[in-house]
Image (cartoon, rainbow, N blue to C red; front, top):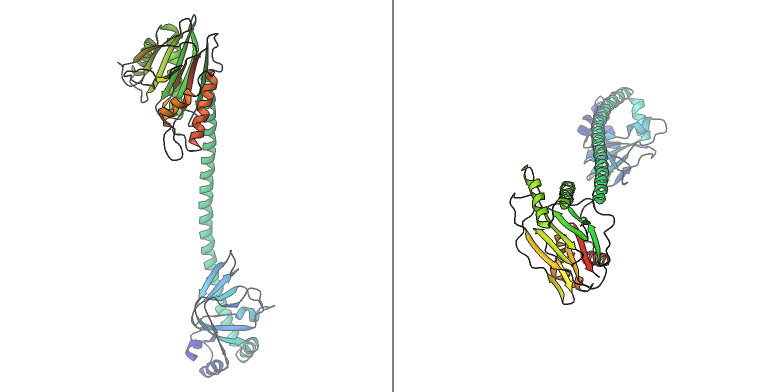
Amino acid sequence: MTNLLARIPLFADLPEAELDQLIAMLKVVELKPRDVLFREGDVGEHFYVIADGELEILRAAGQPEELLLNVIGEGQYLGEMSLIMPGGQRTADVRARTTVTLLVMSRAEFDDLLRRFPLLAYSMVRVSSERLDNTNTSTFRDLTEKNRQLQKAYDELKAAQEQLIEKERLERELQVAAEIQVSILPDVLPTHPNYDFGARIDPARQVGGDFYDVFPVGENKIGVLIGDVADKGVPSAIFMARIHALIMAESDALPTAALVLRKVNEHVTRLEKVTQFVTALYGILDCATGDFDYARAGHEPPLLLTADGVQRLPHGPGMALGIWEDITLDVGRVRLTPGASLLLFTDGMTDCRDPQGEAFGLERIEESFLALRGLPSQEVCDRLLKTLLDYQHGSNQDDDVTLVAIHAK
C-alpha cells in the first residue's frame, strides 16, 4: 500500500515514514459493480485513492441522458477538489465499473496533512493544473468532434432539404401532367337517342398510360377508342398524349378504323426513335345500323352482352403500335342489337390482384358484366370499377384500369 501512495504524484514528495503512517490511518472501502460512491452536488467530506478496480465519472448517472466523462483505475485518486473548494460539493457522479477497493481520507485528515506538509499544496496545484490541461485538451478534442458531427448533420439536413424541394417540384410537375392528361380525355361523352356511352379510368400512379375517347366522326357515326401504353408514369403519359392526338387527327381524314391505326403506326415508327409501344382498339359505330367496325392492335378483345349472355368477340392476331412498320391488325364487326352492351377494357382490369395475389381475371369480369345487363353504360363502368376495387381490398394496384361501354337502348 505504501508503494501505491508513493506512485501517486500528489504524495510523491512525502517522506516514506509519513506514507507508512498515512497508510495506517486510512480507512478501506469496498464497492461492488454499479455501486454509487457519490453523486453530483453531494457535500464532499472524503478524499479517495483507488487501490484496485475502476470507477466511472458520470453526468446524470442512471438517467436516459447519462454521459460517461472518464474512467479511472488503480493508483488514481478523486475528491480532493470538493475538500478545498468553497462549498465543498461534488462536481460529478461516481460509480463503480468493477469491484473496487478504495483508501479513504476524511476532510479533517486531509486538512491536518496539508498543515504538516505545506509543500503538498504545491503538488496539488501542479497535479490540478495537469488535470486541467488534460481536460482542456480532451474538451477541445470533443468540441472538434462535435463540430464535425454538427457540420455533417448540417450537410445532411441541407441535402435532405434540397431533396424535399426537388420532390415538391416533381410533385407539382406531376400534378400539372395529371391535369393535362385529364384535359385530353373527354369531359362529356356524346349522346344519341338509340345509344348511351360510359367510361372510367383509374391510373395506378398520378399519371398513367391508359386512354380512351368517344367522339363523332361523321354523320350519325361515333368513334370509340381505348388504348394502353406499355409501362406507367410520366413517359407513358407523354407517349399516350402523342398516340391519342394522332388517332384523333387521322380519324377525321380516313374512313375505316384499320386505316387510322395503320397510319398512326407509320407516324410513330418512321423516325425509328420509339422505345415504347401501345395496344389500342379503335372502332366506328354506325348509329343507323348498329354495326361497330373496329380494328384491334394487340389490345384485349371486347366483351358483348346480349340476351344470350356474355361472349368474348372472336379475334385473330393483332400487333401493338410502335414496334414494327408493317403490322397485322385484327379487324372485326359486331352488330349491337337493342338491349346489347359492348365492353372495352385494358389489361389492368384482368391483372388487378387481391391481397393474396390472385388476379381478378377475365372470368370475373364476364360474371360482373352479366349481372349488369340492361343498365346504362356509365353505371356499368362505375359498378365494374367498384367491384374491382372491392376485390383489390387495399392491395397495390399494378396497372392502370380503363373501361369503355356502349349500350344499345
